[in-house]
Picture 1 (cartoon, rainbow, N blue to C red):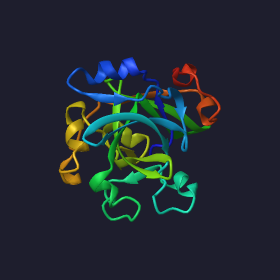
Picture 2 (picture 1 turned 120 degrees about the vertical axis):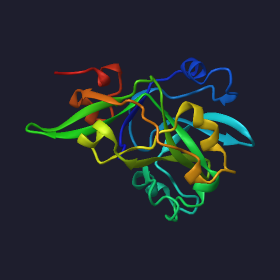
Picture 3 (picture 1 turned 45 degrees about the horizontal axis):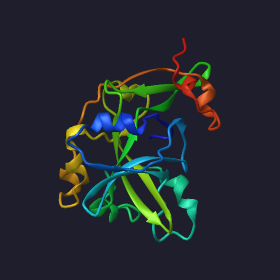
Picture 4 (picture 1 turned 180 degrees about the vertical axis):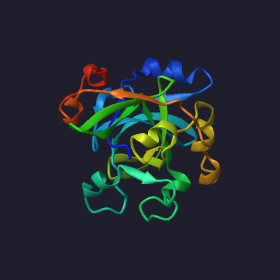
Length: 214
């Protein structure tokens, strides 16, 4: 699964990353964080009225039919294998796909000394994670889609985010394209290293969270 991640991108960073070929309406306020936790806000790319938009949404999907926000902590991830069957996701797959912007994410491995956090990052500075979004009242929320882990990530956790290649952004966000045809396997060249256990605590949020340790 993906339960903590990093998004330290500024508006300028994302403008440079997507390049002039993308016309994106970007919110004037985007949250940067080195320790994004469920229910916190972070940058999501989606289509609205045929326009690309980038804005902060709350992590943890709150279905439109939900009576309260309690679903959010339960729906931070969605399994790609069953996403078209689950009541919370099946309609969103057809019309509310989104891309969650990140620089990397955290997982925990078991060691003789207990659970050790590691930071997983890509050969590219920005990674694009497939997601779904919806509105609940005035709150826009999202979930991150996961798949079976590949390569070295199998040694860390059996699930990983479903990644979208930079060149496939328009295809994934195009509701006219069936979900199963909207993405393809993308090797992000992931690497990882150990980081401080300070990331275990949501209140810790600064650049030292991703510093490597021995």
